[in-house]
Image (cartoon, rainbow, N blue to C red):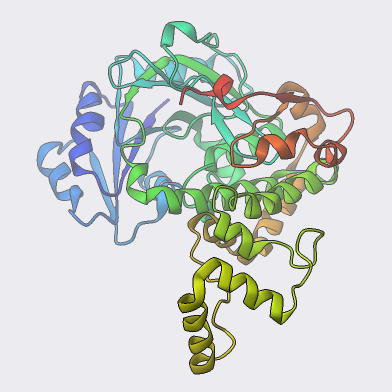
Length: 411
């Protein structure tokens, strides 16, 4: 059985020393190949790779295809029966590939194996097992905690998904499920794939001896918090919509979409001016004021000169003066995520139909193995998740676990 290790790099020629040098023990192996995908890098890191690691099969994309698309590009160039994915900012340990192959060989139902990621100094846990929330956000459980405080899964233990930065999958399972959803670009593509594997009767198992040291977020930080936030929110919605069967979608759909809407306005908390702009003008606390009341308030808030300037601006520029401006980054992040989700909703529906056609395991059975989490993560979540309205939207008879963010990860 031949294995292909695929490393995708976009803006990190400096990371290749970590990933490619750590794989040098496979240089003369006929049963293991290493494929590097230069994913539209500006520094043409493929040139550096060809010079320093000539035994690596290097392919180049003119454009950044995202992590999901980059992996697909690598798979196209690979010849292995098993595909192994390693982050460009990670360094594999000895026996890395062998540990993945052993985990897969031990269980004929195992389609994919999940390796372990630790901090660069090896002391802190990065990924050993994952958890999925009711609205399809995902967490690396125990992230940031000392390795010796984390209970590691035994080899072959089933997991809901494998982290895309250190995982292996049989090529036949990759091809039959369609692999990563390219349109996710980055983030939660591994959650989507894990869900689809379980739905067609395949399994994801732990390979805790396949260890890699990881410079946490060294690559993803280049996206910036805003763009990562858009991807998190958009991809969570898309994963739920394209993977959940009808019973699961009916059970959780109301809570999923209501929570997304709640977060749009909850971000205004802590910003009194913005909160005032988005407040319901017809609510109990916002009875429309008369013109005289509005001018009286302006005089109190801005003084005579400030109120006069406002009047002059309205006379010169028209009544649009004072209209709220969409300059809040968190709100814009949520709105872009919504636009991204709805612009791709038809393709997401096609993927759901494709999965239902092949599905052999209902989601109720999958979630019985891996209960969905309710984890307050964003501003306003704690109040929202504790409310009677939210609780009433959750389905009876489906396993849920309420966890705090500090129980999930070390911040």
